[in-house]
Length: 292
Image (cartoon, rainbow, N blue to C red; front, side):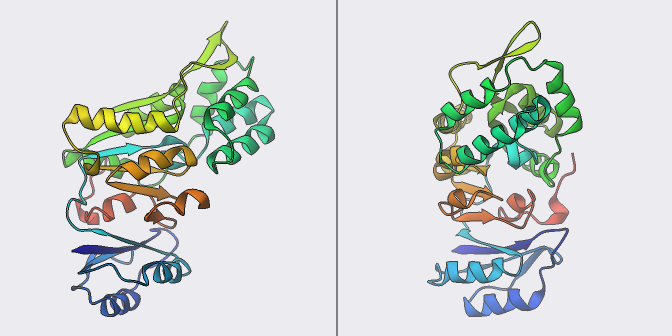
């Protein structure tokens, strides 16, 4: 059996009954179960429809995300999450660069790296090099004044942990941000790159080796091995090209408001919902959400 989940933004759109019922009828689905009024609903079907992606595009135009996945095992035992533009609304290195006066150049490199146009490790070294001499205190200022959590993040982490799942934040960004963000959200562990300092200023170099695409894959394998579970029992979420490896390997890989080149390679694409979408696609209803 497969489960079809329809969901939308809790803020700007409404999921109404007629389109849900029309699709359920067209695909021969079971009775719809509403996970949250006007936000998310699901129903079961026997086989994958041939017009899945055509229908997906039609619903995208209505501001509705459509996910079709196997029913068995969809509630995961582990979450592996990217940080920048996923669990938070910003790219930390871009914010540091803006404070250092080199924002435009660094943002351009970041965008190309996240689209897969540049080698991630080389792009990171180049961007960090442009931050040479930036006082360490600026990191704390950026964290306090510029970084915001993505909506639904606290509920996602708290709900999965309350139901026995393990949560890990694995970022191509920096521990100076990942540590506080992980603590604030309640992640069980975090991994990220380190910025090197000398005389309380950035040296312009990251610590080696750099945590990039392959390191995220390794983290998924390492943590699942440690937990004694299969990678198929993990859910991964990210938005950039360096996330594709873990998104492909995990049992459920979610492209969240991802770059088009990334979303095109993922079967689960969330373009309208927030991080609570990751709970809805696992079958959690809104009244099961845990608030941190």
